[in-house]
Image (tube, one colour):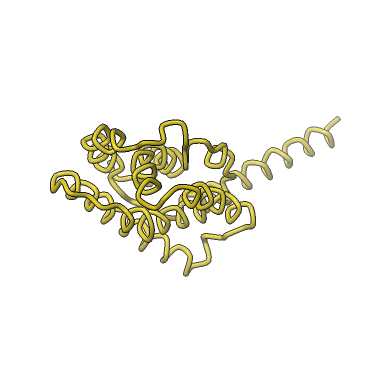
Length: 177
């Protein structure tokens, strides 16, 4: 009877340590004011989404892709999605409104800051990219490439709230208050 109790206790401790380790890897990266980015996006969301001609198509939100990311893959997927937005979406989008452009630039600068944090994390070998993480980001890239470049950029910008909420949820405790 005591051996069974000790075994259960050891199992509990092992599960706790594994969850702490996984949470530590997941949280290795960002200290950003997510609310400020969300506020910037809310200020342009309606204008961006009004330009979206493919209302029934999604790039990020279809996905179970983001919702099925395991804690060990959060750092890698975050890194890949930030790079995707910085290298593709923000560059592909052509905006004429100075007000919208300022807010997009503010968000892009925040993404660059988060990328630098992730780079340091990766240099310390705390941000691993497993095949599942690579597959998840490939699905998002494929969704993007199925649309014409301008439409894909608008669609991706219109879904920024999905990405920001996912980052905030998966990096709770690392965002600046």
